[in-house]
Length: 333
Image (cartoon, rainbow, N blue to C red; front, side):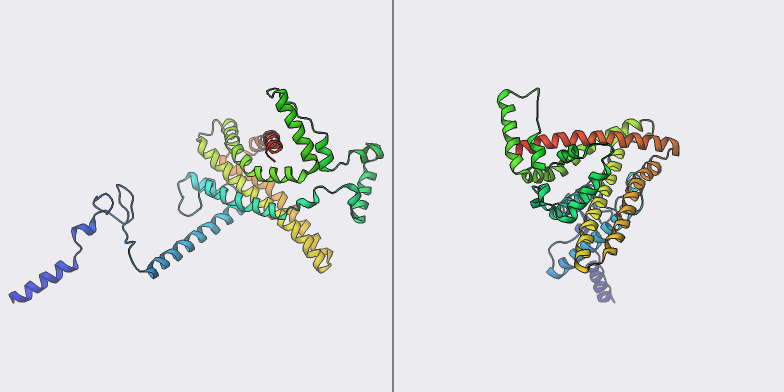
């Protein structure tokens, strides 16, 4: 009987976890759950078989994919929803705003750059196809009521001709620097696609730099909303991520419809895609309006007035950013 009790005690002691199993391996604090409440390290063993590591990796990838797709669907179809969820502290189910913006910005500008044909930038009016020439003639005919036809033809210029007429006068630049800028403009007028490529590559950085100022403007016009600056910045990140996603879809639809029409010879494809593009453009404008209404919760008259003010200020901010981007592009192209 004594022998059985002794063997039972040994078995119980072996089955129970030791004191070290209940302590964090990083800071030696007592564990109260899967993660250490002091340093945050997860209580898991990394020295194990390769098959176990691969299984965990596939689980992480599938979990991230489901969260990413859920975020994309909400971003595109539910105005202001992701920002509201982020402000409420529900972060685990969706991709964070900054990471989401970086990812969509990278993908969208890669797609836009790959779909732009830079070799066609230097084309002149004499290189137009008969169909394009006919369309130009129709546009000129419709404009005869406002401008003389010959004068309008003189104003239809190629990028190289536009660059030749560009004059940049900087009050803070020396005469030598001013001359260097003018010489650079003359060089780029011969190869305008170099400047276009540079401007396309600078666009993501300029948009990212513009976002804090746009959030600051939102903080100003919604000064009595009781929201912090980071909440306005989160709204700006989500709306700009949506705009980039919508612009990417518009470009893909436009290029895809032209390719499908040329391949099949069915003009109805282009008509359907044009209808879809118009619907998407209307949704882009409606999305921005609904976002302001749902996130800030003000009445429709005040929301619409602020929406129109935001559109005007955003246009000015874009123009200012484009001027800076053009100046940097001229110097660095």
